[in-house]
Length: 116
Image 1 (cartoon, rainbow, N blue to C red):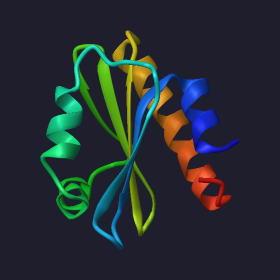
Image 2: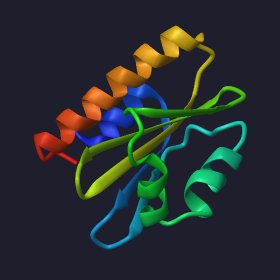
Image 3: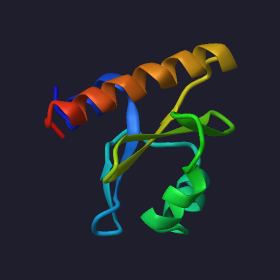
């Protein structure tokens, strides 16, 4: 499975790869729209990968944010990349946490298999 297939399967609207070597964000957007992009703006557009790294250092992964039904999980599959996934769902807190763990595991496996 590649990243586009992963996004389609999991209804991910935005995939952000924060490349810590180049200090750049690489963003992939699907046709699945979010009801609000303010979480994306706050976490990504108003930051740099270095700032994002500083924000999550020492945090348990995946790190999760929520604004209404818009969710963001942040994963660090290796030392050079931080991945942010933006999507919508109405799962309760426990179900969303389990879903986030599953997405985190898949991203980590994709990076370890070099298919991203």
